[in-house]
Image (cartoon, rainbow over all chains, first blue to last red; front, side, top):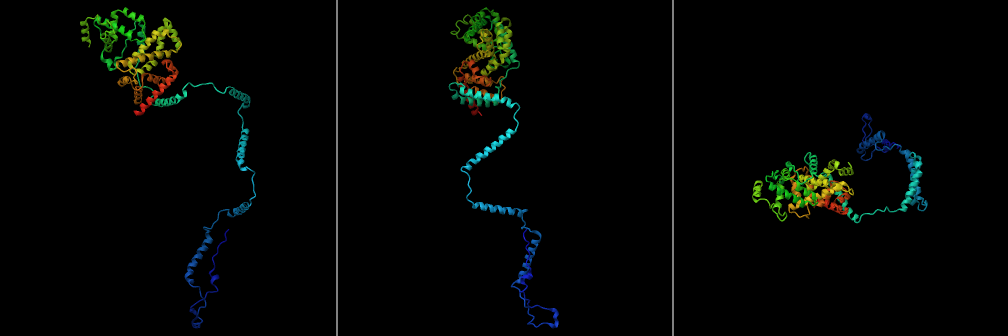
Length: 328
Length: 181
């Protein structure tokens, strides 16, 4: 505890030195002292009274502070309890500062971190050992160790797997990887191509193909879905052939053209069988399946005699003109 | 149904038609889409697919099982597509060695049976900047998810060449998308 500061008593300071001057005693009456004796022998220091009020206020404030508050002068709890040990610690530090003859073994500090880490590791292992091992761990341990040894031996015997990469593989690999990356990116944007088919198309197609293959006299004439064909296909509907001469001519052209245009060399028997087909059947077939674009195709042969020698030569010019006038 | 069973049934005159129906059921859609992606127009695809299956009918008896049936079918389909496209080029007086497939642009613009969104249309337009054979490789890899080895069997081209072709196709498509964004 700090000692309480007491104000100074005014009397103790000025008691002996104070002199009264020009003091007036009202009750003395006639016994008034001569003026020479009526001089106050006491004096006060210069400006005493001027400073008195100020001084009194100061002491009053000081007194108030010491009594109530210790405001601004308080100390932390337990300060004095700790002060002693702090002082002793400080003394020891000072002593150690002065002692210069402490030494550590050579490379002590170099090894210290390793030693600490080793200790930590040992503690970790100790902790692990204390934990339980999985059920059946030791039953399999021997087999696993033996397997491991075998594996090691095998890897020593056969170090390389023996695979080889195709020539130029690694030169192409970058390009391939980039292509794969972009493909994936593209697939996230465009998964399908957006094409569609008419409803029930595949069922109809099966039937159409079966119809064609069941007929031994297959002529490669396309069937068309008129409702959805492109403009070039819409130019002509099926034509009825009205002259047997023109039909025979066109049938012959088909025979030749099928033979000439088929790169896969149709069988001779197929070409021969066309000759055996009655004219009427050919006419019926063509009237059902051919269209304007086919007519253009046949016309190419009719007007190019070097490619189809003799074709159309037997047709009466007038009949042909009539036919073309009718059709075109 | 197993391909081998279909082939066995086809060999017997009595079950030939049944076998062919099974074959159609199993493969007609795959073949159609393979062709459609190449010829673009539905009617053209329809024509080509019918020709393909008529050829299959004629030649299936001669098929030897040293390759897979679907590879054999794809090979016929691919040959028919190329033949058809070459004829189309000739009709349009386009060189057979043309470096793109722009001659099919009208078929795509026609829009019949094409219900794709903007991105799908853009991809088709990008594909028409490729030569037919590159387009073929791209389609088989991208849309049909075929392995290079399978494509190699169908086209008779080495795997290395196919990889290079696919990479080039992808690069061109990437550039097309970048310049048309």
